[in-house]
Length: 130
Image 1: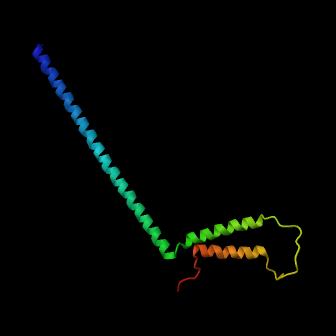
Image 2: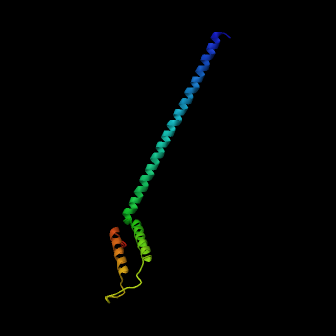
Image 3: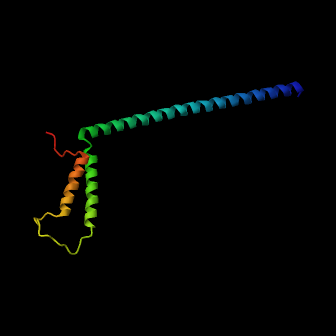
């Protein structure tokens, strides 16, 4: 083979390699473009789901005045006070001035005040609408 034939063969081989590289690069670009579009759709999907969930929760809270959250808060408050009351230390000797002993004691009064305070803070309306 002559020099011209070797040169022509090398040029042909280089052009083939170039064509393969271009095709590969175009393929990678298309894959990246499709991946970016898929990611954008994924993002939109989750944003819409989040907005839908938030809207639903807002409607439920408006409809029942956040009753579930208020009841959970009241239960938590009363559980905490009940646990504290159950574990309190009581005196072994009590001196009384002979005042009112009508069955009321300071602990019951205190618990009643806490109950009223919790209901007031939560603006809890226990009435059932007609």
